[in-house]
Image (cartoon, rainbow, N blue to C red; front, side):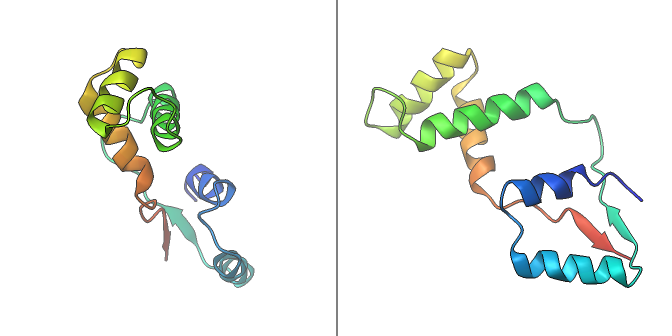
Length: 105
């Protein structure tokens, strides 16, 4: 069986509905094998994930001086010492629903 931490994170962060959790419990009770899809390439860095989460929360909650989004991206990028593009990607990534993390066999 693979690493189930992404599943735990999805449940903890509220992406899993009660109906989905009941269905998952039903599958486990009936012996279904659950595998977690592993990404290719270099493993993700936890510090960057935390930074991206904080950047996204700052942007979404309006914790910046300017009213225009372009200026907000620049301001947040300057505070964290990253590029404006990094801030945009962090906000976009965390607005999207999580990708498929669980496969049944």
